[in-house]
Image (spheres, rainbow, N blue to C red):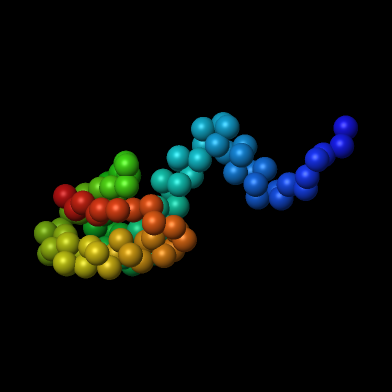
Length: 96
């Protein structure tokens, strides 16, 4: 059997992830890793929970001063996370 066209390994891998239902979980992990990189170790330590759904990233922060600082920087944080991901995935950052 001969292939009609050349297929890149990356395309095959993406198709496999999508067909097996793993692409959402991997995207979520990439978003959480980007959060950790963007806010730094100091604020990562204050982050108790992270949840992503429909373009909204929810983060539960244990310290009020840290939450206030992150709230003031939320637009920059969203921008930097999307830059790390290479696409506009996170629309809103919600801090609790």
